[in-house]
Length: 498
Image (cartoon, rainbow, N blue to C red; front, side, top):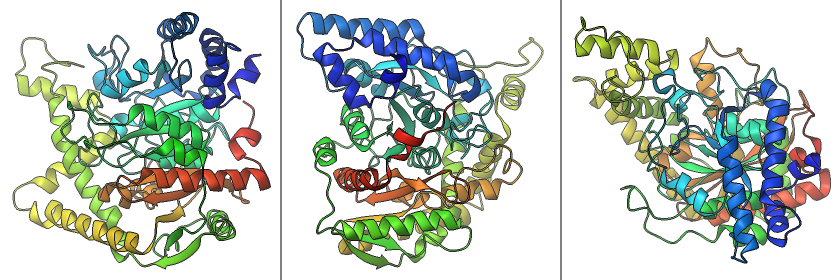
């Protein structure tokens, strides 16, 4: 029975719990058993909250027995990226500097999940402070890609994407600063959505780059992602960047997917040198599929996109330099060298040396330099001007098209350790995803087949204007349905056994 339950979609699980065919406890126990069976190999989770998950499941079952109306995801298990605070459960952000820290409060997103009856199984592995593209920067060791455990599951949210691909959870939460939801989704054959900036509350989400960070849904199907999106999105007065506007009708769009009559843009800058042949082949097939489904394809020229990577790696480190200044050993987290003989400054320096990993130190130093007197205008100021140009290119494009499509990543999953000593090669994994974060609009990655060279998943990226997130689900659902009808859904039917 466990094998049957873990292969169900979130929508199917919720329906069976609501009807009484399954209990939330049965579903939770099945996924906990799966985690116990395979996570030693995958290492998707940093902390499994077995007792907490079963308590949440029992509460859902009690509500159903009392005849109370259940939410659309009540009783469905979820893997939560270890960047959101969870009251009474460790939150480490993949870093030694917060090892063992137990938050005294829930993030707004965490609270909304609990209020909806979603069962939080535990916290997933990630690149330290969400800085990375492979989950190799976690202080607690890398996560493996369930398609090939010797390869990366993407980053920074590789734990969440791996949990989905390994059937350890039907739903997951990620965060996307430069592609950290979409890139892991692409290389694991799952669905990941970066909502419009400000659409999902950042209160209680440990900050990396405040003008770029965005939480979002991860799932194995477009409909499941939409159902989760609806639960977590919405205005939050505790977050000053939260958008006070209705959540777009994402579930309705996912249930009635169509591209007939839509104009779909293809950006010429999203291909060329560095792109794997099999990735481009699957992308070109997806574009042809969109044509067959009734979409009009429009070629777009967005010259500023070529500058996005450079601008991002000035803006994001600058903001991380500011945000991570709070980790000073004085208030919470790790403290090293406090033996009564050292000054506060010395204790802070020793703690940061021991608590931060190489990638975090690299970005803090880069950001501090970019913000320093004499260099601010030349580096950070110039990067912000490029950001404006990128936003303008998107605005012009969306005057011509309804959505834009591209490969999500230039290549499929690379081997663990392959790019560790080459930061630039690692950063190029986010080549297609970064422009969307700089502009603040919405984007989705969904599977569009396997690359012929290595049999690994390829992702199709769909980009929509700000607060038009429903277009992602409308197009994504249509592509997913057509793809499944012709070739079978790669993650639901071909995911490798562990």
